[in-house]
Image (cartoon, rainbow, N blue to C red):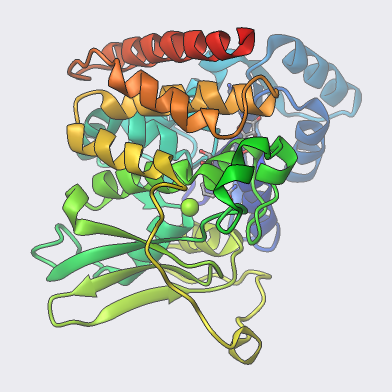
Length: 395
Ligand code: NAD
Ligand code: MG
């Protein structure tokens, strides 16, 4: 098993591209074993030519065929696979040591779990998979001995502020976790204007450049809600142990407060290459092209409490975690349907949270004790949320 043989799931996306950018600066240290994505042939072709992976997978079969043809014509030796099975196979393949799990949304669940079950070092960007299957996921980590390292900037910050031998909040002497969030592009927008915000406006995040789904999640603060749930699972925390703090500059990426009153914060430029490099190099530090923080330029950092009237999705997420069972599955599924509908301009911005709330209010909960049960809840919630979208479409 090559120590630095890497698989990047979601290689054509924002996190995937940033991951390959870090790897590009360390050619002696990392070798790309496999790349996986949905259907972006051009970008995947370029990545295969540059990083010469043993395997490239596109979920879409027609796109995979086109890629295969183009790589053949270019004399590449990369083998092309297709479909969800291909993604699951490269995630669990014995020849790779580390898997970057950066497929967006519930689509990443199977491949991420495959890497976890195979006992890999899993660099977790795909927060939705942990939100959906928290208990199953963490049980699988314990059984396989997989090493789970958080890529999400907040969770990576918390991880960096914990002792290396962390096993629980109480044994580490931790009073609370402070999860920071910028408040997104609509933090100060008059409430009555929110309904008319367009997908492009929602995707114009003031500090971070990200994929469209997580950008919309940041505008509704559903992203912070999903991260709240993610933090509960990653750090064995109860909802009461985590406080969300609005911090518009995105310089403090999160904090840990200890019993003696000490608060440790991790800071840096809002650039995902920092947490990615932290996990890729762990436990060593490796160089990135991320510029130094200029404190003279920054001048000040601001903090405030979240406004739940403005960001109902955040409150709904906290309730879903407190309600446990498969409420987080329903929350995530309804959000994915609502965000898709908003991005295709079928519903308006404020209807995203309405659809999630209606789905949760009408949810018949069950115990998500198997992958099948999780997928069943996911499908049920999608169907319900899609009905609510259709009802609005017809109005
Ligand atoms: P993105 O939309 O830019 O990229 C998504 C990637 O997933 C692409 O490579 C795409 O091909 C692939 N993909 C989409 N659907 C797929 C499917 N059905 N099967 C296989 N592959 C599929 O998204 P992103 O911003 O890179 O986010 C990826 C994940 O990382 C998300 O879970 C997000 O919440 C998380 N994350 C992102 C950031 C960020 O700064 N972008 C920060 C923290 C966490
Ligand atoms: Mg984050």
